[in-house]
Image (cartoon, rainbow, N blue to C red; front, side):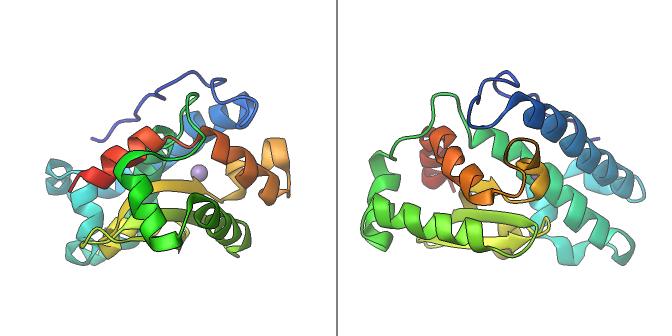
Amino acid sequence: MFTLPELPYAHNALEPYIDEATMKVHHDKHHQAYLNKFNSALEKHPEFFKKSVEQILRGLESLPDGIRTAVRNNGGGYYHHSIFWEMMSPDGGGEPIGKIAEGINKIFGDFKSFKEKFTNEAVGHFASGWTWLVKDAKGELSIISTENQDSPISKNFTPLIGIDTWEHAYYIKYQNRRPEYVDAWWNVVNWKKAEEYYLSN
Ligand code: MN3
């Protein structure tokens, strides 16, 4: 069975940008619910418990028809929230350094242009989903949005940073003001973790 990862910091650690009440319901309830549904889908085909969630999401086509949609939605939700907590940090924000900074400058010109493009994408994406900075198999960076819990890794991308744009991610504090949420989120982006993902395979 898959298990719920603990938050790498306290529920209130990302205040004032991401509030404690949101973190409690988002991690303890929403993430838990994706996990429960993911596990109960796999219980019908327990051989998949031997794989990692990444392996499962990369191989959606090989899943039995009866559980593919449930795994795509709930395995995706389970995985995305697991990395989302890691992609934020109380010590986050600011600008990237190191190799990922070079990668961003190469593709987007400079950090300011990248941030503007990513923000526009996250604010404008008309769906419940996610906006990501990803690298492809060649290591090239791009900004993509995904709907629902469809995963970048199912399309062979590695997510480096990502923002949850489902209303449950921001409604308690920001109500309908997604631009304010996206603006605040930049203050907790974990560039150190993004660099790790960028340098991994
Ligand atoms: Mn969410």
